[in-house]
Image: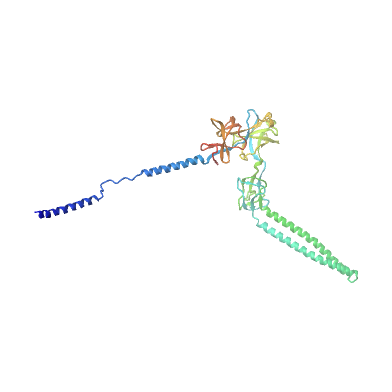
Length: 423
């Protein structure tokens, strides 16, 4: 029976072992019914926030420490406008006493134009060149003629030396009565002839040398230069066009290369009604206001009263000079002038003062101030203000002529802040 039980129990043990292995294998299978774990995103978000903070910090640093763009103006001295100071008002235009349309002395074809409108030129600066091929050939011919005249003169000198030697021998032979008088006369005549040819040859050399000078002057005339320093206001000719100092009568020939104006010679011309000309005197102080800058009063004075009247307009022309030349004053600008009374003239005139844009003046708890520009940075400058005139504010103390101040800035300024002046 025991043997039978052992035999019967053997298969049961084997089956249980197999089941255990199957259970263990099933535990090794991947359960795909569970949802996959979500990736962690917070490290990336944190990194992006850190980068954004860094960029913002750099931008703030650049804004705080980098140059700030500003608008500026230069402080200038002007004449205060005193009510009742004017005894006569008039209007006129800015003119140039020194201007010229630059042309050539000879007719020719324009080869090169070296200027443009608005360009500043110096005295004797080359502004254009003409075709000089003909003048160059004439100069070469004149130089060749001069060389030929010099060679002919050297030949005559050599012949004259020989003739004088022959004459000396003939005179010695005649003295010894070894030569006839006819031989002596022939030797003298030959020497005299060569002396005359020598004088003529020297004259020919002088003429040839003068011809070379004329040809060189003609060559120089093909180079057109500025007669004085100034600014080019018009350009009248282009390369390839013909130019002549004499008008071609409506043809295609130009009469000038350009027009140059001496900006230092600008002045004002006004026509004063002859009924009021007694109120104007030479040297009288004048306040001038350009139509382009109505808030800018320019100190000026009467230069001269032209001693003639316009019969048709019943006016007298008066020349007025600026006491200070400014680059903003341009030729042909319209201008209004106020002739100051006798008590306002010269030494008795109101003291010149400073007016600046009201936008440039700032006020805080410490007082009124402006920002002064020094070496591409700003400095605070306390000022004392006076009465205003339109968009301008009088500055009694704190500023001087030539100071450059900030009118507007794209951000708040601090002392020592770097700036960049807008164009």
